Amino acid sequence: MATPSRDLFRVTLLGTGAPPPRLDRFGPSTLIEVGNEKFIVDAGRGAMQRIYQLAIPFSDITGLFLTHHHSDHVVGFPDLWLTGWIGRPWGKRNQPLNVWGPEGTQQMMDHLPQAFAVDIRVRSRNYPPDGVRLLAHEIKEGVVLDRDGIRVSAFEVDHGGEDLPAYGYRIDYQDRAAVLSGDTTFNENLIRHSQGVDVLVHEVTAAAGSAVESPEQLKRIGRNHTTPHQAGEIFSRVNPKLAVYNHLLLFGGATAEDLIPATREKYSGPLVVGEDLLQIQIGESVETRRFGQEIGNPT
Image (cartoon, rainbow, N blue to C red; front, side):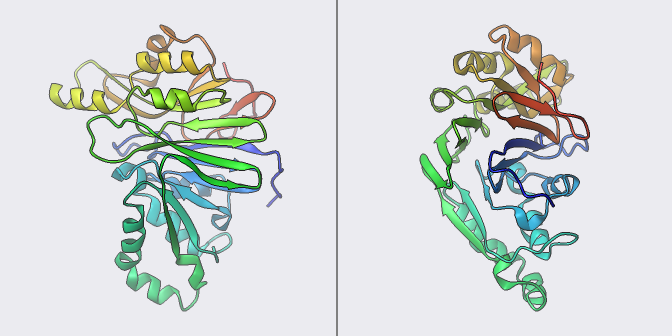
């Protein structure tokens, strides 16, 4: 594998879906390649398969950041953890895996080895014992990692009526910056922490036609997530070089294309509706590439 450039700053949307088990949009997960580091933010369903598609050695993953503990954001973690340890077809992880996340992360990392105790006991005879260790770092708002010119900051967001801590992340490197919103409704704290970023990746929800969910359920979801109209205001106040939709939570007949008109009521800047394996290169300019296509300027 080629040695990464020290100037590398790339965001790849591994999965852009929400809880429904769609085959075209895997669960929420994002790869951050910055300098010589590779971080995963959230580990939804299919994260490992997407990493495999990108031909990234599992042992290259530096660590994982969790925005919150809803199942759709963590259900792929055991696969990333254990398959990355085994390492086929690429290098085994022989160092502990660092995991940053909200309160409850330590508990999760303590209990997962108990759940997989038989597998770990047997495989430890043939695989590096340190590679299966999990090192939990419970976060509060502020800088959670600062090394080699890379600064990762966590900030609180508002997951509406859900009774759980939720965070977004900002990654700063060489005067460039990207923000991942995590799950949140319209949030002033996110707007404040997103000032001056090159790329803002934000969740979104929309409903149309006859949704399966009851009106009460849709109202609850609306308290926990951001509509495209609200996102348009966020984007207009942040003014990133590129705004990207992620974690598409669509109901009824709503489609990804329906997100654009409502967003444009408030925001006229560069905008992309994310899809799985979309790569966003952050340099002097911001360029995007669909999986298997050449890099180019976003529209």
